[in-house]
Image 1 (cartoon, rainbow, N blue to C red):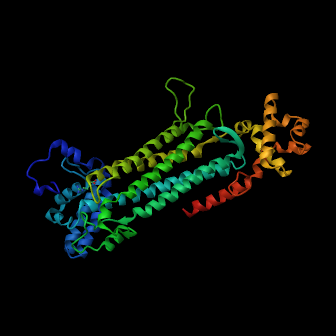
Image 2 (tube, rainbow, N blue to C red):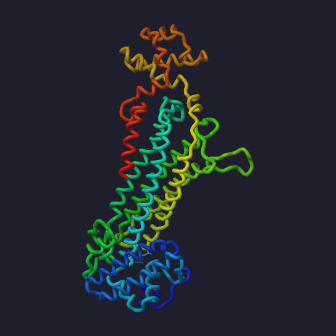
Image 3 (cartoon, rainbow, N blue to C red):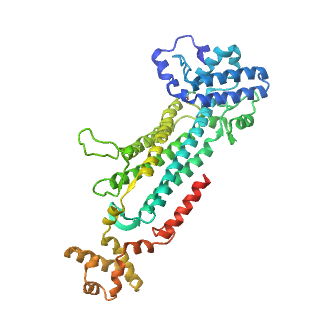
Amino acid sequence: MKLWGGRFEAQTDELMEQFNASIGFDWRMYDADIGGSVAYAKGLARAGLITPSEAETLIDGLEKVRQEFAAGEFEIRLSDEDIHTAVERRLYELVGSVAGKLHTGRSRNDQVATDMRLYTRAALGRVLAALTNVQAALLSQADAHRDVLMPGYTHVQRAQPVLFSHWLMSSFWALQRDRERLTEALARVNVLPLGSGALAGNALGVDRAFLAEELGFATVSPNSMDAVGDRDFVAETLFAAAMVGLHLSRLGEDLVMYSSAEFGFVTLDEAYATGSSLMPQKLNPDSMELVRGKAGRLVGNLVSVLTLLKGLPSTYDKDLQEDKEPLFDSLDTLHLTLPVVAGVIRTLRIHPERMAAALDDGMLATDLADYLVRQGVPFRESHGVVGRLVRAAQAQGVPLRDLPLDAYHEADQRFGPDVYTVFDMRQSVARRDSIGGTAPSAVALQLQQARALLNQG
Ligand code: ARG
């Protein structure tokens, strides 16, 4: 059974049949496809195009098909070109010729656009929940290790002391933006294309507002030509997914480094690590390496779809069939990745003593410059003075705090004996108490805001 066989005399080439078929991957939209058809059958009855009892027959039949899919009992045939054909074919087998009324005024063009939106909407709901779980894991670890000091890095060089909780929360906020982005994308996904026909609209009086209500769409697409050709929502979803991937990969990279013997700041739980087949001692952070790796395919899927859309003539073109595998793959990838990241964070062991051991006086050079600033020295000048002190300490092979007061005086008259009070990591951190800073008071505020956001859901 071909949905378009009528005007054809010759058989489709066998290879072409395979090449053309999307059932191998679009069967996954069965629930959306059947849900859309149930609503459409009701719409046809409302418009008087089928009788209420015909609608009932169609809907009962469709629900049977849905059950067969859900139970894994649906038998896909070689001739089932796509999910739309497969469902209609099976409906014929179950309810007979009335099945032929279901597609009245409908095209696979508005049908597939509807299926994709329904599928994406459901999948994004799950992704958002999983993302929130990762945020909750970050928040609870930050809460449990509020006051642990660690070296903060720029260029992977020791920069300034920060709170470990501050570092953890830096990922929380990135994921919060991702959650907002996905929620905003969801609003543009949630628009009904059904009733647009092949491209020009529905000629048979189907009430699209009714269809939207039945399917839970917030609005109805305002232009049928745009509705069947629009895949912005796919590209947008893929971008938001890729951004999640990038954020997780950066977190992953930090954890790979921090769990190495050189850093030793954290240990990944054995449940999220693997070993080496050759070196018995190894405990590798494969979970976070894979998270880093998955970001590549998320970016790749976005680029695939953007490239697919570029220069396409308006409305539906068969190229659009290629939108599905990248979309499914990115959603699957997040579905798999996010719970792993949540697990890694929740089970992470923290080594505050290793973090403390990696703090050196050089990381307080800015604080030393700030000391002079408080004596009225312009910062540019104090930066230079401290730079020379750092050089002197290095030349003598001693930490800054071991330079004698003479050396400080020589560098600048305005250094007093109280200069040594600068060498306190906790004080340094506590001074950075402006909004968004690493001071315990500022981090407490962050945690409070974060908690409120998670409670909002
Ligand atoms: N399998 C097709 C797709 O994924 C369904 C729409 C087919 N429409 C058409 N005019 N051939 O895009």
